[in-house]
Length: 106
Image 1 (cartoon, rainbow, N blue to C red):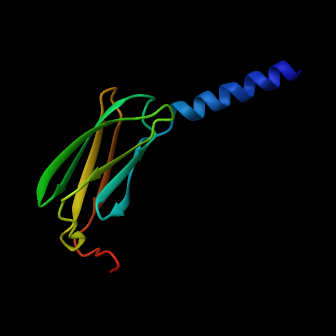
Image 2: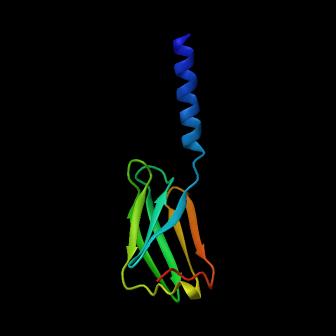
Image 3: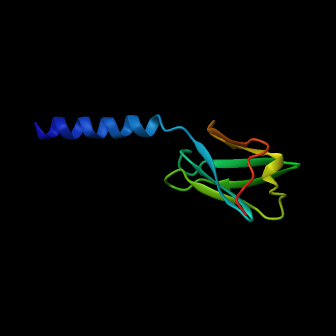
């Protein structure tokens, strides 16, 4: 009975891990920094930001599929709006978009 319960738990955890969608979140505005989660372990990720001028950084996700990338010197004028896309080399993709007029608090 315990073996069946353990097998069901492992199957549930594996299923939840397989359906995790990658996400990209803005975590800091000075300098602009994004955190990606839900990527495959050690997946190479290219993050491209469009904020007046395009900027690209490359990073690798860690064992848990997370990474953080910073864009020093990027114009963070969120009132004009900006977006970012993270593309993994194993097919994972996440995006972030801040619409014009959504100004950060001073």
